[in-house]
Length: 261
Image 1 (cartoon, rainbow, N blue to C red):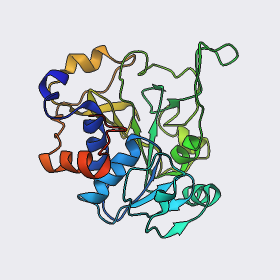
Image 2: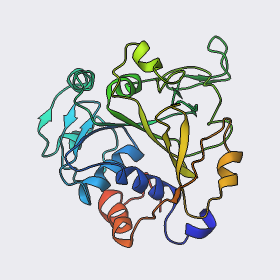
Image 3: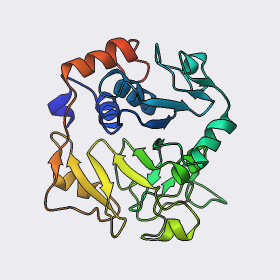
Image 4: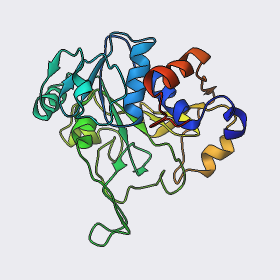
């Protein structure tokens, strides 16, 4: 993909664009620092002007004038409907008011379970990771969870996560409900540098939706530690337009702080 697109857009721009296209006008989205912020802003500035963006630190419904450095920056409340608290926005999530949640992960398995705690045994890990933050709450209660896992490989797409930080469909069909989680919630999409994925309604296993431009099916298979469901029909992911790239570069992140130059 890099050879085909390097002259026009970079991978971070493409991931942000792909995430933005998933968001619907009039819905709510819980975003964190980085690409989720950019995806929310791009959606709001294009096809979803009434998207309600919610930040973990308490900003609700802002019309962001610039890219915040963190979820606690004052601009996350700019022209918003509320400047509240982490307690209040997490409570809103638990009450079922959040349509979309954006998350990242060091490891993801076929059921959309996420590990952001450690690589290796928890008692003596090879690598200690940041942990859940609010990710467990978001994935447990948001109606649809979108996972941005940019570096898809056999190290990140694993048959079983080393530590279950954040629940996806757990062990398969019915497992979320058995664990006491709402039945209308769960992983919705996974975005990587290779493809866009969803989840099969019956098996709850991850399945291919579209290959990114220039990516082959063999690359997808070679960079996964589990068998991704390949349907008979799948598409090629759309690329950002010149106008969308202009918004990303001039309006959202003119310094290239997150998307680069």
